[in-house]
Length: 289
Image (cartoon, rainbow, N blue to C red; front, top):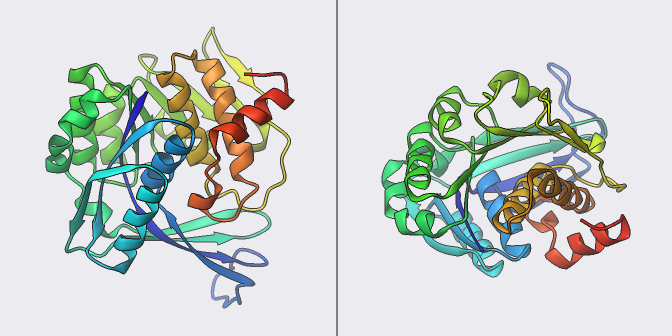
């Protein structure tokens, strides 16, 4: 089972605050931690921890943050052959975590130069994959070319349009097989009936094929929330792994919900990505897959 991920890699500086900032407010953080992150790298790490062979296709800077991200991916068993070192600084993200919500500020950095040439250089890896995972943190030209290659090679395309960027959606959505969206993304993207849709609802679980005759609700798992930053990425990776293993979409979404429930229990994006035994154990506790 092989997953290819074409996406972002960010160095995260996470700040915990007592509440989200009001206009003109200066606020002391109660906690600061630094982690490996980026939606692409998070999903690659999660897929590897869940048992997949994973190829990461990305750009990071020729700087210390890039060194840290590449080492983190390799430590988790991700193949970094197609992680390119570029002159642009490594992308960074600043999650601001309050009791009521999370906001994330992103400096795109090297993710902004991840382009069609990087997708083409990874043609063999994309062709060998069962699933190509794409997100919204890299440019539309590169993501679209990766999706085109996947389509031409028979690789399933799973698209998580987060954040929603018009050029990425326009390039990838027509080529996607499965789209994973939250409420806001679903309203913005309006996935066509030609693609399968999974709507994530956080603490309320997920809905497969919302608004369609075969709509199915997927229950959430009980959990304790420490940091929700990586939950969506854990869900996406788990769903992709389950699909690569031949699981149907509803069961894959349940596997994703279990992974997301485990991710929110741990601070930081990369550290929170769950292992396969942990997900299997949680599923077993709640009636199996």
